[in-house]
Image (cartoon, rainbow, N blue to C red; front, side, top):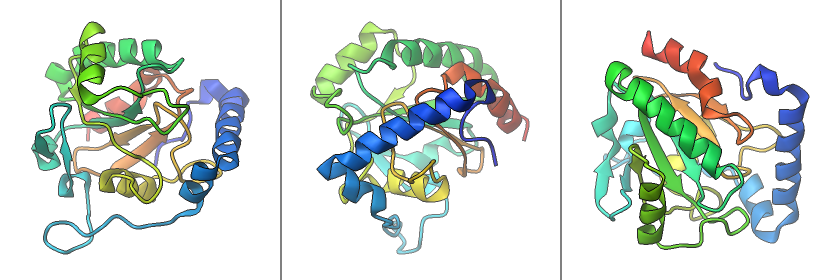
Amino acid sequence: MFRLLAGRRGAAGLLGTAIVAINLLSSPSGTGACFSSQAPPPAADGKAPKSVYDFTANDIDGNPVDLAKYRGHVLIIVNVASNCGYTDGHYKEFNQLYKEYAESKGLRILAFPCDQFGGQEPGTNADIKRFAEGRGVQFDMFAKVYVNGDEAHPLWQFLKQRQGGTLVDAIKWNFTKFLVDKNGQPVGRYGPTTSPLEMRAELEKCFNQ
């Protein structure tokens, strides 16, 4: 199991995580999300999901995508927002990782826009797509979803169940990143204070499995 936060961030990263958790807990909508322990709904065959391959999600154009298409790939799954202070740095570094590893190692990055944190993703899917294209995004953009609460997308319920967070399992802010191995299993969770490039060592471990 990989570390939640990169070591270089140390106490500062943990403090940042604690602050956003406190902010989440202090909001009426956040409190319920933090303490709900709902399990992901059954897969199409009625069985409990065993990997990310058991889920379907709509892409940014509204087309359903069977996540089994990513079988055998190392994945980064992340909730994104266009107006967050972390946006420019994360999009730049995700593009860098994608350019470096997509062809050579099979890395795939799945970005899920979410407007649950500070109202920082208020636009439509079309707006979000234009924003991402303006930043040269080459990785896979999905339709806007909820990641916390009763309406959370089943994939995100599964990710939180398999990789709990610091203090609470709920997603605490934009750009929470899950690392998924070639078998579709979530093996790491990283907060917004961990930059994508700091995930390189863990990515390499997954590539070499």
